Amino acid sequence: MNNKVRLPWFGLDIGGSLVKLVYFEPCSSQLNCKGQEKVGLEAIQDFIKSNIHYGEEGRRDENLAMEHVMLGNREGHLHFIRFPTDAVDTFLIVAKEMNASVLNNKVCATGGGAFKFEKDFREVLGVQLLKYDELECLVHGIHFINAHGVDECFYWNNLHCLEKSVKVSYDFHNDAYPYIVVNIGSGVSILLVESGEKFSRISGTSLGGGTFLGLCCLLTNCASFEEALSMAEEGDSTKVDKLVRDIYGGDYTKFGLPGDSIASSFGKMTSEENRSSVSDKDLARAMLVTITNNIGSIARMCAVNHKVERVVFVGNFLRGNTIAMKLLAFAMDYWSKGTMKALFLKHEGYFGASGALLELMTRMNENGESTD
Image 1: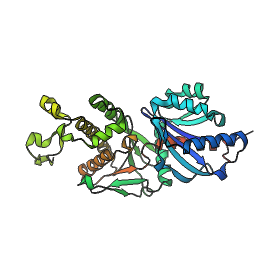
Image 2 (image 1 turned 180 degrees about the vertical axis):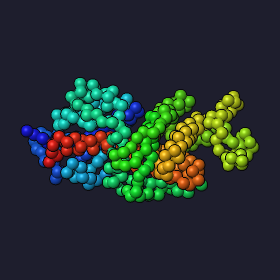
Image 3 (image 1 turned 180 degrees about the horizontal axis):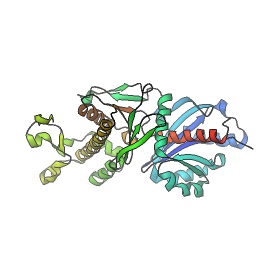
Image 4 (image 1 turned 30 degrees about the horizontal axis):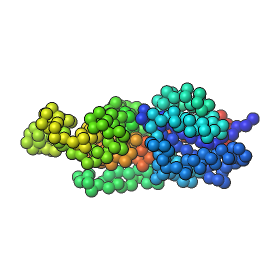
């Protein structure tokens, strides 16, 4: 009986907007195979490593690669790849052309798309998706990557002057619990994590990254998340939002609200004159601020209710989104009077896929299968 779990090893997180894929590349000395199997594995590795862009929208985040990671008694490297969920059909065709299913016909997957596209993977690629809970994969992935990554966790300093704020490494290994994790994807899920195996979903909101992109597409005719972010970076949200000073003429001192606090998101857009004077960049910036403030407010209240001081923000909404990270950090610090810290993780949206890869290791141990 052959109890060997065959390479290649993948973890998939198929979300509402993006597919995240983590690939384990074993060191050449660890390739205990030969013949057609070895040729097939080398072909897959060459394809993955020789490309940073896959088609128009697929991308390997080369800067996030992790080297010399021990997984399932093997040493290797982790590669992180993403592409739009709309491109799943193209992904399946490419994988079929490479005969990926011949090497391994089972892949651990998580996210809603693991259920939605299960039939497509089976019929097109001949692969069985072993489906795992996305929140369990998220938490397990966070703990694994944080334990093996270098400078994985960080926060933003100088929050009184966001233009000068810079990243500062944070040691999240010791005395991490409890903490709250805010996963910002198409929507938002908020979890209370009390230990490596004890966690629960305590809140969430449908207003997430998908909302930001969807409304930006409607309001500005942008075509991608990157384009929406680029526009937001150059916009002025105060031309769109009604501020406290627009109502009081200055600060609302009785309740400690500075004049530049937002009283009403998009509140100035009730005026035809104001609507005619704002740019698409201003609208994109206002939408980013609106979504971010809403997420930060919910996260802070969850932290208050559960008496937790550390809130970890993750998810692909934060990829390259320095503005949102700094706004979240400022909001958590300001409204908590410095008692709560907003933390961020370098691998942002890849923790679910990493957790799915770890489930493969768990499955091997439970079934007595070997990786040697």
